[in-house]
Image (tube, rainbow, N blue to C red; front, side, top):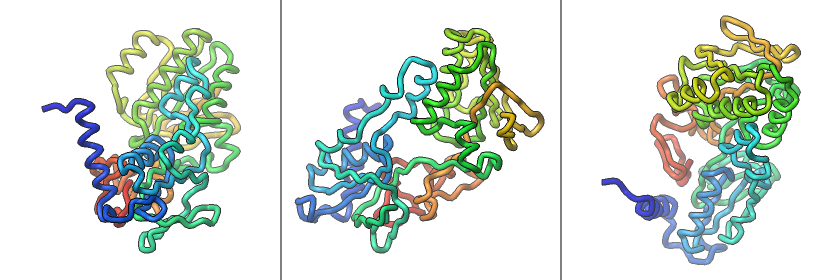
Length: 328
């Protein structure tokens, strides 16, 4: 029998609270003396976990959120900025909305975890104790897979805009400056990568902008995969319908390297030189879970680049590779 959304939230809240509260439910009720949960990363998963652990415990659990940024910028909605229907300010939300729930916010970066001592060391030198730790640091890019983009200067010239913010704005400005009739090339890495529909949605949003402002321009998608990896029917219908003539899709286009000076994409069997292009680098889990051995990539599992096992894992689940009292 299918659950309603309300039923799902009710049962889900109970199971998640149980996972977080396990082993510490008998502690004192005052937050400063009771159990402590530290959440690393203030994205969708981390900020949501911080709020609801605090809320569902009726304030009995002291929750600290560690996030390097002062505001949250919605990555899934950032493609709308490229299409011109939203501004980056529309996607930006300050973290102070968590204050009313009593979440303590620390603007810093987690550098190391000591599972035995149950502490988190921050880049500023502070050490935070925890009873339970939730790791949601997001992804890091695997720059070594594209040698020419290893340096910061090259990364600022050939954008990825796969983390919403300054690069999203810069990419939009590049699109605006491109002459009508120009070609925008984007490269998609081999799966897995964060948000599988995202690159194809991005191509549609850029095509939307071209269809209204630069009718002679086009998008070329260089996909290292042998086919569209998510929602193929939806996207191919858009490319063959509303955006017909604006999008050219090329599968099996593995990227070997780039020539930053000439803005040339060096593929396995060809070179492509557009007016400008963006590259979505290969990705893996953040540095902290990798250092703990929680994100060991294997060829057998597409999911394992981001998690400790081939099993899907929720924001507060554990696996055999996860240290005790730690969730990711």
